[in-house]
Image 1 (cartoon, helix red, strand yellow):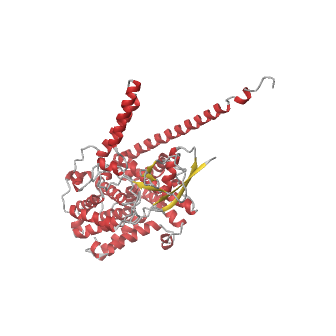
Image 2 (cartoon, one colour):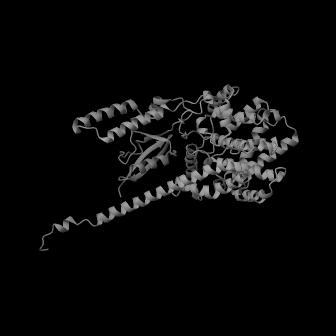
Image 3 (cartoon, rainbow, N blue to C red):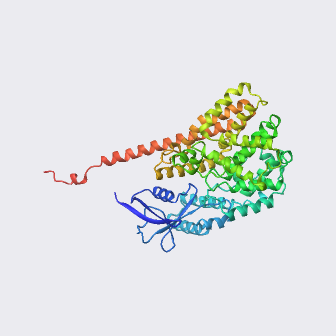
Length: 529
């Protein structure tokens, strides 16, 4: 089969793509997307040697290693200042030009066909829809803290913007400045109440605003006064936490916020303040804030198989979770960011022990053991028993850590896209390095619905149901939404299977009809032969 080789660069790195000349267009785009390590929401641009944008398709003109094309990854960055039509231009769209071309085409068709075909109306509708989507992407400034929550659900899509793994100094300082400007402002009561619910939509808030909301949680749980936490120390702590979460698709600062916000919501929904003391609540919230610090996007299996520095340092025992703990206490060792610096030594030791216990509990290899312990004590659960409380705190952070499917679908589904992107990045790296490929991360074997249906049935439900057995009020808040999510992904899985069967049937039909076509050369031979 004839193939075509295209030579190009990505971030100055030479690459080449080889594909059959009759390859489907989508396969070619996927090939370039993989080479660029681009995510599902990233937009690719390919330039020729003259700097002109060219279409990524099977019709690409072959080139040589001396005439590289240039591939760039463009992503809609939620922190960008570009709005509406400006964003369209930045992404390479010219709506005015598109509309003019559409009008011209419409006139020509009308002249020749005497009526406008339905396809033209559909094209016009799509252009208008695209314009509305662009114009609804507002820049989320500190005013967002006071925006009307009853307004429409217009918000930026959670595009993952490819950047360096570690945040740059400029990036951090920009967010820090905005955070400090906003930190003394009063957050509306409406937002405070919304923050206590599992339906909270994280995609509406940018990083500086998220830091303000985390500050609100510490304030509204009375931690500031109870533990004598100075406001400027809390702000420095939150900034250091923000700085130590990396630019990766899923385990990033927004994930840290989602886990903390769910923990905060569960504390209020279960009226936990009346059942356990403030130190345990402080441990739970701070553990959620710190639980994935300096995560690099590769799980423990990869760390161990690749014999990374973390795996060697922690002897293959929960390398990531041990590292998250260590980074947390590095931050807390600094006087200016130690929110526990005014506590007696015994209280600090108790808090440190509790945070380590909670963060280590987020290692999924310990999931069954922790869940079984909780199920064993549930019939005789006693809030006055320290061992019982310790297990409950571990269960609470585990539930919070994997709680995305308990949120509304328009909040939860983008998180699944981000998670799959991170998974696929890891499995690609495992294949590249010749390591065992983690099955549930393999882009060649996993589909979006298949990744969720089993996880919901065998991990989420057993965990969530046991917590709801202790707190029946959680049934409607976290069990019912997960049931809906399971129905949603089950139907999606069935639809994909039907599509796969139809495709196979069509291919079989085409092959059969082709094989039955008469040989024209045989028919043309004289009858005497």
